Structure formats: structure tokens, C-alpha cells
Length: 158
Image 1 (cartoon, helix red, strand yellow):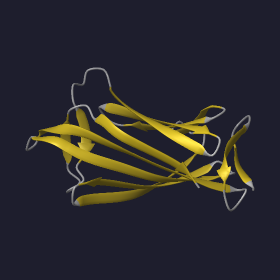
Image 2 (tube, one colour):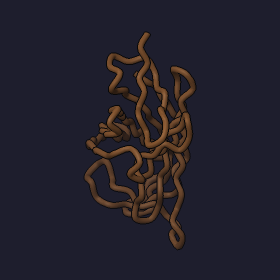
Image 3 (spheres, helix red, strand yellow):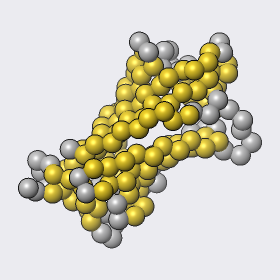
Image 4 (cartoon, one colour):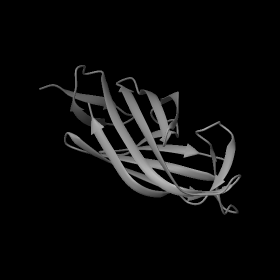
């Protein structure tokens, strides 16, 4: 069976079996619950974020992201380069995706173990802020929320 390897700055980051030696896809998702503070306060909002992360041996990364909450969903695509501060190799078996938002930071740490992987999301408020600012899935407007509480995570390598 053939194994993919993604060339990073100084070493190879081993992934898993795949069709091409030049690409791999990591699928990650996490579900969290939080409360909307304003506008229109609402408790126990359940949100799932799903990412299809395509890694090329050249270090190029593309993301297909879907966010869903009940009957509502939105999606977007993103392109990056490994090592650009948004996607980084942090150890021999870990990738880190950093979302630098206005009031907070979200860090997704993906740890690869053989042919499997795990995801650890971590939300952190920036100094001076007491609430999280996110774009609403329903209409794209800005709203303010309590800290997201992670309910579940999933990670697979293709």
C-alpha cells in the first residue's frame, strides 16, 4: 500500500494511504454548544464545523468548510500554504490550523497516529474581551456568544 508524505520545511509529515503520493485529504469536524448573548439571546446553540483539508506535497492547502446549526448551513473555501502561520507543522505528527479572529483565536490541532488522526479545537479570547464574536450561519451578520463548549470531534485521513 502506498503512503502519502507531505513535504514540510525540514522533514516529512507522514499521512496515510491514498491514491496519489502527491496529495492527501484530512476530514475533521467538531461540534460545540454556546449561547448567543446578543442580538436576540438564545441558549444552547449547537454548531458543527466540518473541514475537508486537501494537502499537496508542494505545501499548498485547500479547505472546504461547512458550518451547520439545525436547518441552517453555510460554506466557504480557503487556500493557504503550509508554514504561513495559518497552517503549520508543529511536530513530527501534528498540524496546527490557526484562525485569528477579531476578539478571539481558534486553534485546531490535528495529531496523526499511523493511519488515524485526532482533532483538538481550542477557543481563546484575546485580552480585554469577554465574549466571542462570530458570523451567524443564518444570515451572515455578526453576533456575540459565550465560550464554545466542545461536544465532539472527528478526524479521518483519506
